[in-house]
Image (cartoon, rainbow, N blue to C red; front, side, top):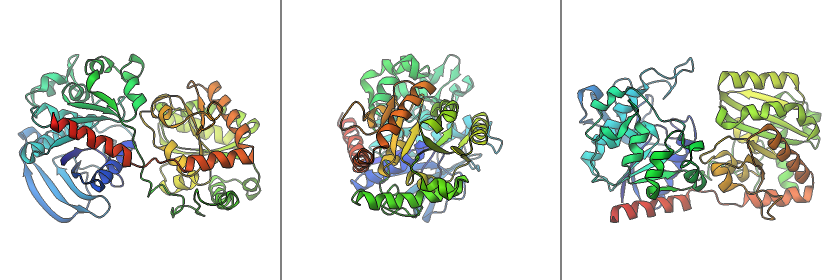
Length: 467
């Protein structure tokens, strides 16, 4: 089977959010299971390929001239890079000021038109699109190639000027959205299958609360909508081999050996956070967050809780970058409570791994969460997730106070009060050494790999091609 998969991000080459990790993980596992996948990515610049060859792409004058560089990348394997005017940028979406590039609409409309041209020329068995950046592809294609649209985050839709409707393709009428052009609404209308990145998110997006205005069009396509939970790369996220850790460990280790390794990781985290060696040696629980600073992730739900952390008791370290006002709030909380709360601004992949390898609890107070990868990564390292009951968090975390086979602790609404209650319950359970080791061993043995999700996608591709 030949699949053309188009995405704006692909780890480790271009990583902004979960889309990059999901696309890379799915592609790698599909290939392992025998699927021939052509990955098409914008050529943002600086990506070297071996055995490279360049061909032209037949696009309208407004979208070109365009070419595609095909070759092999040492980290991700076979790769196709679309080169067109203005696609090459230092960041796929944002200027150095943090604002979006003013021509993002043109850039991703041009990319989508190039993807359509590649598909029309190569005739894959299935075309698999991801989020709004590739949605307009279907405006320029007929329905002779089965299509899959993955929804990683419905909050981002690429809404732009209505004048685009005259140039994106013969099926542009499906992309009209109250006088504007919406790449995602058109893709939802035209894709043969619409796949949300978790089963619960697939249900949530059919409601006004989580549909971001597209709940109506999605309900119109309800028979085509499904949910497939993302996986994680269990080779990258493996505490037994992770070079970013001060000490490695595994689920097979004795509890004492595992604790000793995690204490060494904890000491390295405390040093980075500016906490003393004496603090690292005490038994106070350590909670961490590795996150984008956005309203979605509930960072502002955590900030009011910081004064209460001493009584939980729990120290917390947050690593992340994003919205300036949220970063300011975290800096203020860290300045006011320096013994219990630390904020490390920025993106630091190695330190993120170290945080997972040191933490007793992973905090994720999301307002909505299409899938979430961090809670699965945390469990792989034995950090117990404390989450809200939304989207993929609902599908991956069951409350250990409600279920003897539970995997974490759940706040049943996204509020400081509910999340504080969940933290107190977490501290009570993890304060018992035997209960903590039992829970830690359980979550570390869970299989969050891409094997089962990739099989579900292959089954979907097969149904579409047979149809």
